[in-house]
Image (cartoon, rainbow over all chains, first blue to last red; front, side, top):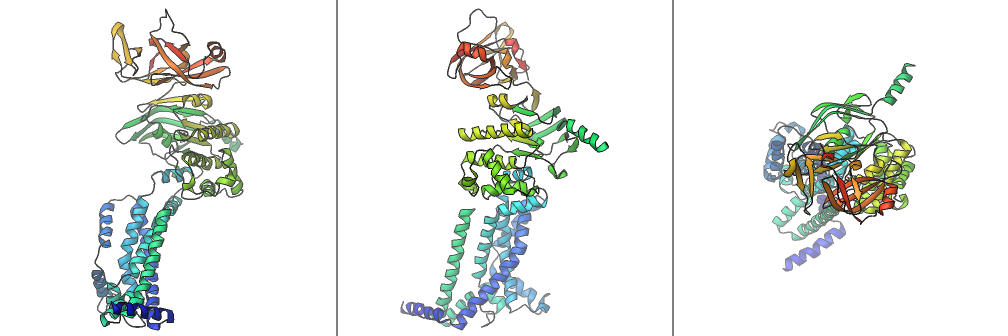
Length: 229
Length: 350
């Protein structure tokens, strides 16, 4: 028990004094997850909206595929992305392996199904009277689609926040694609894994506290948005 | 000259011209209308039991539902969906209002912004709120979840009034609201009719109110429409009895007699002018139907000197038309026990 308390005390010192290694991991995490969430939303929201809004043949089957991707093991995603972006893979020439953009690509693959699935659910849950109401007030064509998406905004933002939470707490793909390179691709989660392995609990605990704080903020946002919706 | 002639022609054209219309509501029923014309400025009341096709007809007229067959001409142009025409000025208030997840102001402004009517936006929104009896200062900033059911319906109506539609379609506008809201809604509808000559198409179970505002009444029963001038609709289970008559037993044991219904579950129409109201049990009358009931409501009719009296016989409402003089002489007031008298042959079949 003594080593845990000692670790907690040292963690406080590291954070307050601005330990460079600790803050490098924090900044890399924020960079990677922010990049991946922006790309995920850019593709995921329109994709999710189309999946939820339109009727087409094969819709049920496509929805099943997307929902299956939600449960994909992260090591499998990491393996697939590694295979594509390694020097022997079809995208090896882009030099993404062991880089921050490379981790962002892997996290995007992991997180896009979350955005698509939750956005589709949000759109499908819209009140049946919405379309009749806005048509009768004069909406036509694209205006109907944009208004419908705007009406689902709280649920869509909830989807984005949930996806961001998934991205920042991800360790598997970050380790496999990023390589956990100090000052470069070391994130909060990969650093915790490394420091725990080394027995340096202070750094691990410090990073864990930051991750907990981020998770707390995200959960608070989710509760707030669910109430709004 | 040609432009002037075509404008004059357009002014005299019916606003709706329906031919051989066929709409379905799943497997429940099919609405069939061989012919129906609604003139500009008409105020049409639509009456019928639940599930008869009222909402389907209204949604079709609002171009929210595409008919399976037949044609609808709006201002002379054949249309089936609102996508065909950008300048459609038809709007509909649903029975259960839906408000966008925004403030009251934004809800009312939505239609104006969509139709590009941005000048004086704030003034138009405020004016619409006043029309439905809501204080703009208190209500404009309220969020959709901060409104009662009646307030929501009034805001939804205000959103339609703000765009000054040519046609306003209303599906049971006062069905699920409190009394004050119902009053304000009725007042607002009456006002825009008088002020702008808006064509109104209203489905309601409130026969007395329809009697006040409607210039025409359509009855819908089992997907069939007929123009009945505000007749009572008696939907019964008819059973053969003596003397070649058919009877329908009410829940309080009284019976309505008719002649030759086309089927056991046929709907009969009884015009208010065929009903005699008596404050005492009439003796020695040839009419077979002498039913006891209670006056439940009264309303002045559009026609001067006439009063619409609703008498509840068991659970069945009978709308009767009396002169003001008769009402005074008989001392008819809500709550009074009366007898409604009519011949078996007065019942016509829908």
